Image (tube, rainbow, N blue to C red):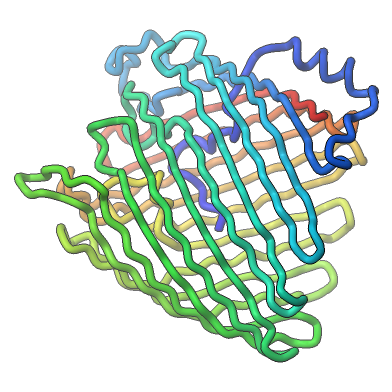
Amino acid sequence: MDYWECGLSRLETGASGKTYLLAAAIALAPLPSWAVFNDHLEVFAQENVTHDSNIFRLSDNLDPASVGATHKGDDIFTTGLGFLFDYPVSLQRFQLGYTWVDSRYRDNKDLDHRGHAARAAWLWSITPHITGDATYQEEKTLASFANIQANRPDLITSRLAEANAAWMVTPSWRVHGRVDGGTTEHTDTTSFENLRAVSAETGLSYVTAQENRVGVAVRAEQGKSPDEQVVDGILFDNKYTQWGAGVQARWVITGHSRFDGRLDYTRRTYEQFTQRNYSGPTFAATYTWTPTGKITVATTASRDAAPLQDTNTSFVLVTALAIRPDWQITDKVSLRGNLQYAKWDYHGDPALGLDYEHRVKAGGIALLYRPFERVSITGAYQHERRTSTLVNADYKVDTASIEARIGF
């Protein structure tokens, strides 16, 4: 599910201001692309420059000197290098990708960092009726300052291994299952957010002749901190157990619209600081409308626990609404937008000893120009505003970026 983080919707590759790549991309693009492994392998480079008007997500009531900065804004320059590999073998498909990222800040040099994103996947099939995939993903990136509003760089390394399978037992009945395990590690030694979690799900669906389906699913999850820390004089490991059950559906309403969704009853319990316990409905629903072959509008409503890497010792329930239009103006030019609203409910934070909430509104636009098959230039702008029941936890931020990417 596509969650929206409480704070800046971070660019996947950071930002960079090297204009030479933009010129190189345009100059080299007309040359024939390298046919590596019969075009199953792409090697790419990208540069991005972003101006961020409020790096540390500070309230208007706070002076940047309060976090040791001279001003709120900064320019971020990022270089990205990587490859994508996709190779089919009979009914199987093997995928591998890696991106190395080097981000540099114009003024806040202590925020300079290197990160990466990696993914390996095996999309398997025993028969056309028994399919699944096994994936491993890893990412190292700078944590959002929206969670701490302080000049305290924190690199997060997230790892997730997942396997799932689906079996069409009959033309009308489908059984599916999934297991996964992940870890989240922080370089900030003051963080309580290091976590290990495992989960599993199984379900049964009825499938129509038009491949619409409706069914039921049950799932369980368990997580804990790999290292104990002291909170209020108590050894704290953040262990929890969660389970849920509900219905899910995928339905093509017309030739131009589709609905995907699930509704569950979810219960999470903690061994310590049980005021964080939650039981109640969670859901995720997406309505996709394609009035023409070049316009797509996806509207998503959701209510679920926040991603582990974006939270602290609280249980955080996120209720969100997002609208994302996409217009393919020509074969080379596309325009994308987003409007988002999210309410983050923090339940019984052990460190603060209280409940609180953030409300975040954001909107943005991006223009993508692809002059050649493996060359793209993207410009984007985003405005975001957060209000909060905590004193000075509000902020406003504008980000503008331009990125050039070339693949071989």
